[in-house]
Length: 265
Image (cartoon, rainbow, N blue to C red; front, side, top):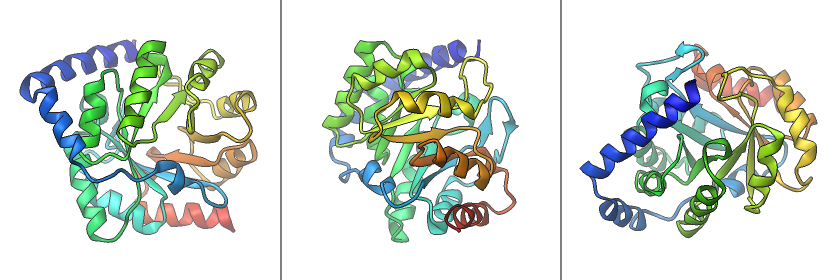
């Protein structure tokens, strides 16, 4: 199955990276990085916020923009009004890299576009959290379905130690209590089943009522239009994470502006 293969490859990749760059060096770089920007503070404004994603490839859709410049996309998204940028750093299935993350941070800072960067990967090991912080991430994705309770708790605490607000992702009802045990500040409901890659927008509708009303909840996957955003907002989404729809648009910046314009019209 896709998820099992992805997890296996991730473990192998992390083992190789530890050999090439020892954990102590990565930790030192992370500790010396500028303070992270607060993901929740950036998203928690009036209306519904947009996390725009840099995603060159998709396991379900194939190549989206395989040769796209991550810096160009991130600058376009931020200038068009995105509240945060998600950067896919998984290389085998999504065509991303930590180098994308590292290049985006100074490029945005140079243009005065000081919004948070979310490192979106399949994080299984503390080393990956340190790597993300060292390469400029302000937040990371923690996927409940691929972590044990012990791993989840440790990684969440490590994020806090590094000043990062993790996005804790769930997909089904069984994962909700595990996520809530962390007292998370931000939870993401993924409308895509990572085991089958099928998307059902109503996953959000089914799960949101089981989460505290005052919890900040992000809708992930399956968002292709302003109508989708308005529907998710009516179900309680405070932010949406959009990748494929923006990556497939002829003009990603225009797609962001049109999406936000429609939502706030």
